Length: 165
Image 1: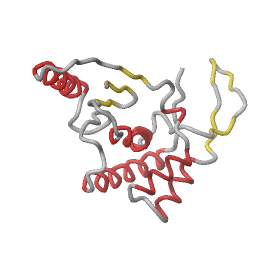
Image 2: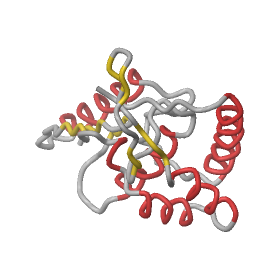
Image 3: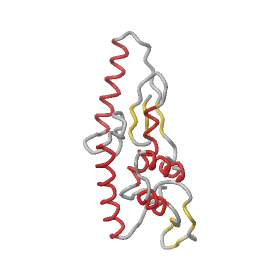
């Protein structure tokens, strides 16, 4: 099962505005790795697969030994550390009031479990990004974007929480 973020209509509208502003800023500053295909307009699993296959074919044509490692980050959206995410948001330019807003957005969130018509007691969410929210996906790819900037030999083709190396 996965948690789903349920928020008011006002919150959804505000999150959409924030997302558009964030994407304008991040795209203008070339923040995202060109290899990150997940949750980005105009990019798809098909393009990620084509890119991956091109890298394999290029390696084979160059006479290189080609292997693949496929990674699926378990509970990826649920395990995002808020402090690290806030630091990464600051590093990519969201400081001051914007960073305080993100801190507020992530803190003191409550969740409960509904089974049929019964609800569990609420508990505070201490890590993760809100799944099903407007901002959850973009916050996640900001969190993992520097994976693409690692110092290793090889090529990465990340798609959200799945990566081919």
